[in-house]
Length: 291
Image 1 (cartoon, rainbow, N blue to C red):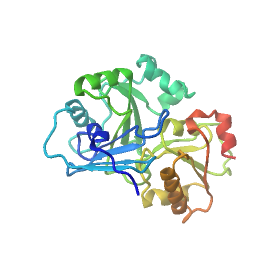
Image 2 (image 1 turned 45 degrees about the horizontal axis):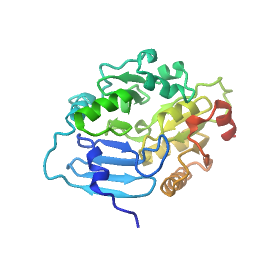
Image 3 (image 1 turned 135 degrees about the vertical axis):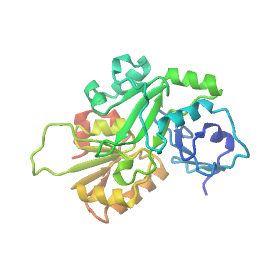
């Protein structure tokens, strides 16, 4: 039976805006392991679930709080009056002008400035971090995440009294199917027309970009695939690889369920088991893993 979280473990980190969610660290040590998902539902209830240990929490607040005033302002700026997302007005696309720690972050995984620019990564001083946007086939913004910089962490701690989660995600909740995912299109040497179409499903945007050197990369961004997305992917590609974090029973269950759903339409679905995230491998290593 899953453990229940104490409210101090998740309530202070809950987003102010209704319908939004954040990902923070909970039980697993190491970088990029923010697997505790916290969401404020439209009725104000705060729910939490850790995708590593399965612990969960629920909290209903009795009254409003002002401690996340800055985050509330950010939420208001993230969407137009009709609810559609907008990128920060102060987004800086020139990576050389980002704060040093934010500039180093994608580069340490071997991403090139060309790849950073092609995928529209930027930096926002207002939000205090790297902006990672996802667009659909028509160019509409469906999701963007903020990866807080050291500067952003200090500013948030000063205004709220608490550090922010490593990532904060804003979504167009009207987006369905593969529009809910981030897609990094294959960017390698042009393939013969009779080559097999390959897709790789990963967890985060940097991994999707890295994988796109070998195949089409899709970042799940913490969402579960709806039936439309499963059908579209299964029919669009000849081969699909599921490459998620494999050292946790909850993630393994998620992978197994996704495998079975995709195999309803396409039998050539494979799960990849590795010790590291895709973004930590070189291009040649990724190519060998996908063979």
